[in-house]
Image: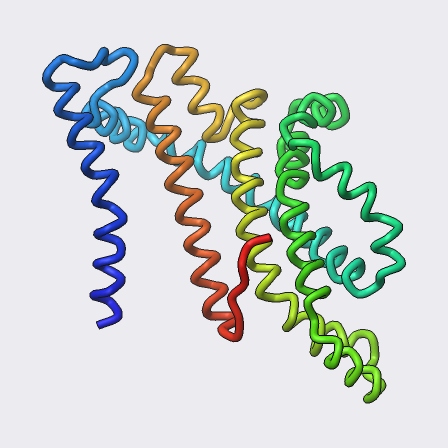
Length: 257
């Protein structure tokens, strides 16, 4: 029964995009669309198979996913502990909040010239942009997870004289975990978009580079293929994190901050 509901849900979700593709194909076949500006779905699919066969898509996707995995790992190692510390210690929060609030308002793409100046045109500058874009969602949601902790639990942990490490593992982390996953999903989405933007501006590899190559070579099919892959991978990653969240922390789901 559950599988049927899932299938129905997915079927309803796919109805609209399939309808758009069918209308798009009809307009292209009837000659109402300029193939240079908007190629038909069948043309795009044929180009996709060609790029898939020669390994070009796989190479660029793996490059981008490697950068994303490395950047998100660094983000979590920085943002998660900071969220716990600032959420648990109000004095430190008051000291750092103004600076973090200021930095949060600056879009990650604005830092690309600075990071290129500091780190060069290699991998470091792209990963730095990704980390900056993904940091605040992870940090803020972890922070709110600690802040939302029931004061009675804090009081009880103090009464029993729990050590700091025990408080973190037994009290703070279970409370912050649902918020952390929300922040991680948002950070992953922000980081993915920022990485693609960085690859478009300055890269010789990656899915963003594949998109710009299509533009430079006047190959609209490759442009649309790149856009589709970007959206598909982002959707798959978000769904994967949601599935992992349900399995690891079934005790609570929270809304995005």
